[in-house]
Image (tube, rainbow, N blue to C red; front, side):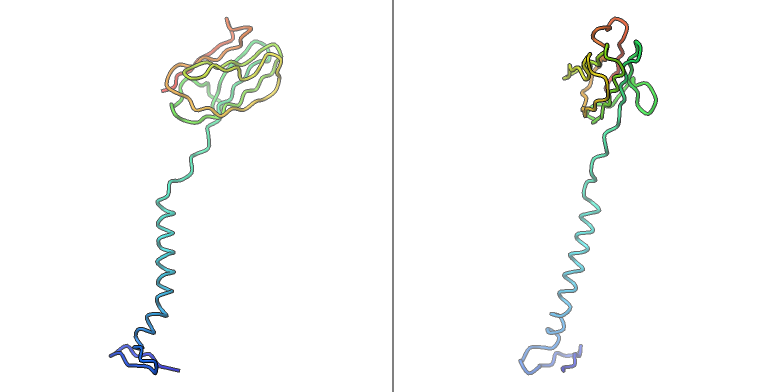
Length: 146
């Protein structure tokens, strides 16, 4: 076994300086530490995954009611270019839930449907209207997206 000294380089039997032999044994450890440091730095600066879509709850029926809420409060204003999850609870087979606004004109639940449907929507700036087609004269509402 050879002893490593950190003074003047001495020669081993294969004429390689002992300091160079010692550096080769340290180098893989340093490489691993450097790799771990870089991976940690990249993980810290990588963009985080997008927040889950906020849930907007639409309700139509029973009776002659229609509305949109978020966390129990009526929806009057939402943010543009934000992804929302619209959960529509249709509680009557005499109503539908129709959403109309910039870039969308869609019946989310049909008249014959009763149950719950879910949609993921990214809204543009503007005014959106929701209503029941058969009873649009008195079953309607709106909200702004800015």
